[in-house]
Length: 349
Ligand SMILES: [Zn+2]
Image (tube, rainbow, N blue to C red; front, side, top):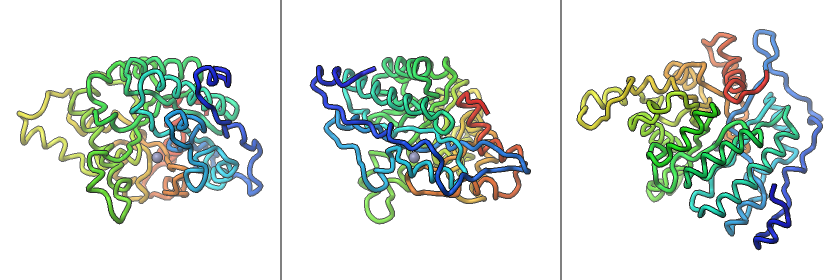
């Protein structure tokens, strides 16, 4: 593990990590116990964010410590929010901000980040599990980092962006990473960071970089993974796409018709494009009952895991969204609330 001496030797400064300042006792307000059909179920939030202080600083940036971004740090309030919402376990991930970084520094940053996250999660294993950070801009290094994170640090999968410096995840250069993720049988959470190329058009009112840009990037990333044959070459990948898989499940049938209408522009695939949507996982962040019902119709209820996006204040009612959407069996609700995520993450129920 890197220590203060290592940092001093390399001329790097390290700021104390707030991950250790977490209160271990439940909030005074009590913990909501979620039941389905009278039976207590363990709930898992697959989509929540955190930050490890001191890592952004290695890039000359500053880890935010106030406002919503401050809540990225694992402060006491996080547990209170989880207890109030009925979330038993959060799956912690860190949105990539390091894809521009050269190899040696990237390796150092990822090592610190994964070790700190692991240390924290292992110390609070009843409430938190972690997804590894990966320097995907260096694909062979990314594969090594994933293996180390899973085998040595006890992290449960990886979190990556929806593109890497303008390159698609379906680019063959990233296949060493996909091969390792498939070999290790761990989930890879794809979390978008808007479409950098569209940033100019998404300015103005409505935070469109996030509202539209994020699901758009996921839509593009998943579409390339399907149409370039990546999901054929790695059929056992456990990809989980944020925000309900972006726009793709909402308009999936067009993906099937494109290659019928204009087949000269399509590579041969093993399945209909929409069938790949039953090969991936998506989170439940579509907000309405109708949206969740549609997502289940397209992807399958067994492919949906609960997400909140905490600490970003998109929703505080993810549990109720799943409990109150009409038409699901108790088994389907339990799957979405936690059992599918636990299977994906290799957690005990
Ligand atoms: Zn998010």
